[in-house]
Image 1 (cartoon, rainbow over the protein chains, first blue to last red):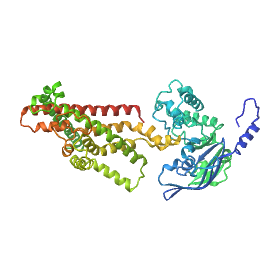
Image 2: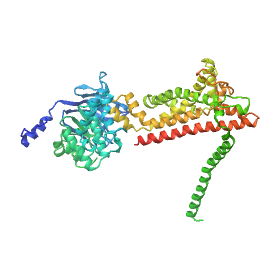
Image 3: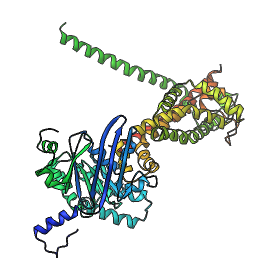
Image 4: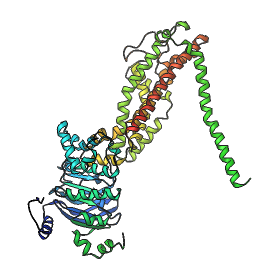
Length: 274
Length: 285
């Protein structure tokens, strides 16, 4: 997948390679999943498969269930009291609501970045080290190596390397969000779920996050919920369009935006409703 | 008068009333403290702090009373803090939200308003008689712990409630357990509020008299308590005892005792304000 500099590829084979990626191993999948909040059906019979090292964008009008659906994969909906689900959800082939699955283990594999940057009210270092510390890693040396690497991978290292002990809350919103990404990367997840990660950020911070997503997909499987269709077009390999809790269309991003199969999708992406 | 004139007049009138209301309390307090200081300040010296009670006013001191108050303070803190904070954490973070937890919540809030003498009767029955603690420091501290538990529980819950859910989500999202999230994120973030509640509750506890009279704490204790099972007296009791004597010299002793008690209370409140301020600076959302 990761293309080395030596290898000369023309654009055609590159495009072919991108296409090939869509046949990678399935990392996230659901089978006929329904979600209820009390009596309200939030997700209606959704089956989907998402492949390794791809970026999938979830789009759709507000309240269509895309965030709810995203949060299924690390079981964040469990904290909502009226939440109930039917059907199976798989991460790397394992059914994540199986009694043998520990939710803490699952979340080490499936990291999450939230809509509003939510760093802990601690130092930058402590933020990134948190995931490792709760796993019992205490060796200072090892911790600082991983913290450095994670901050580098999140394109934040150069901006904060001199004041790792500064409070994370002193950073700008965009930096805070990249810190949250670094925090998620530190435990080496397989999947990163992003719930509108750039919606609270200015355009420059947004483009930094987008560049980062582009880079991260070499190593991670990424799912991103977004209200911004240009963003979906820029960062994702595949796009899933949700409407009223149903998965209307899930296909290659270029196809979805240029030649959607469904009338609803076309009306949404052309801005006729939503 | 025109409409605007009316409004202006109302505005002014309320300002005047507001200033009056604000200063009424402060002035009354100032008069009270001033008269106490005039009466008692000269009486405070080493002899007063280090003497046992006596029938002669000039030889009497508050050694047993302030050491007793210290015992009560420490033991009450030891009993009420872990229980109160744990209960608050449980109710806020763990307990299912249903009719039963609502019932508990209402009852705990109501308990905070029960007159303290009723707690004294409860303490007398449970700690003094049933558990046979007698009129000891332990019985007193247990009774006062019961009295302030609702305050600590409510303060803990309020402080925990103020922690934004995004912090919990971030922690859970990293694979932290509920226990880790509570200990490493929620409690540190709410520590300022919890500490403030605890200190205010404890400063109420050391000012209480009625429940201790009911459980049989004595005003005349001719020795310093050495263990939690010893008999004891506390500052408010000693003050109460002295003010009821006809001899004016004892009233002066009482004034001196009040100064010490007020000093301790102000000190505790000061610490509470400082802690709240410090934690707020450290954790700002």
